[in-house]
Image (cartoon, rainbow, N blue to C red; front, side):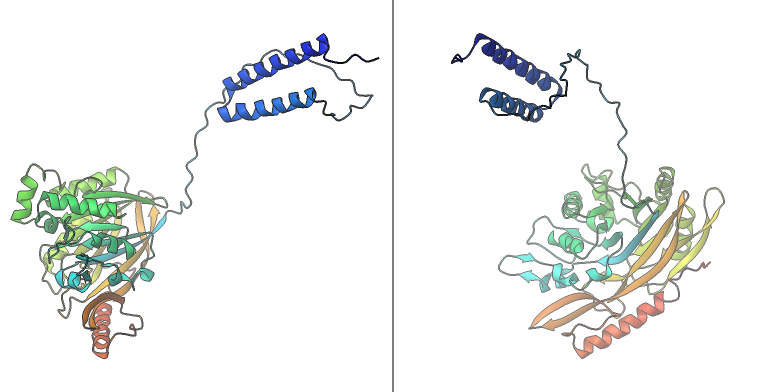
Length: 433
């Protein structure tokens, strides 16, 4: 007759099994994370529960010899550290750029989008027709005003902070500040403008403050780019701001010698493409002057690949200039003497036109060459709709919006003709002296 209850041998086996389980848990605690310990302990507890409650295990075939082997403890080997590979989605060595001219949210523009109930301006609709033309890898515009941190104040020389959001929504990812215009409002206004651009996702160039810099570094698809902003002439009031305690160091270069030093520094640090947004002192010019040509030659000889001229509200022709690097190797540089106006309140005949210049650049050794050029002509459309002024930036080479009246259609056509006269021949992949 079988004896009921637990025998001493059964109890001993259970106790030994529990001891083995506890030891395994301690070992796993040493070598694994808490999550691993809990997982393995749960599994072992499940096996023990099965043994105690008589869960039937799969039968072992009679011809299989089961041998218990005791192994000596093994010290876990720490794997040798492996370098983490740098994975880039595309290292083609080719990048596309869009360069745009002046963006000025002047008082009449602000009035057109001002909400009397909130006291705020929503500038985004002004560019609602533009983003489809702004699809390149790096997209840069020139901001010609300060942004007032006190949101309900705006004037011709400053805009509400929501202007930065509008620039970003228009497809741009970098804004080059007009240093003189910003510094005229004082050091705090300059800081607020730089911070506002950064907080809205824009790379801020033109002043040294926070995340902004007079020179900004970019790298895209294997091409190393230095973007430099330069002011040809700083006014007395702006100079006073620079000499104040809070304004010192906001400009690295405000002389031609310092600009050349900055360009040389960019090259020595491996920049393959150097772009200078050049704010001309003369803003009321209606053609490229001899002084502008002389300056462009000097700047490109210092190592600049692309000069983007801003300041004049009128669009001016482009040119290729022959130059050479420090080793005497000949190269050519593209000079966009003035990109004109992307947005202003002015209705002067030649102030209503601009262009988005699209450039494809390919890295070539320590430098880069342009492999493609095109442009999108733009027009600042102003029209009263429902008794309210409305500003919209449109592509002048596309069909006019349905709401545009006949008078504005005629102005846009003339604007397109002037843009084509300036850029159709000069903006080509040819070399000109």
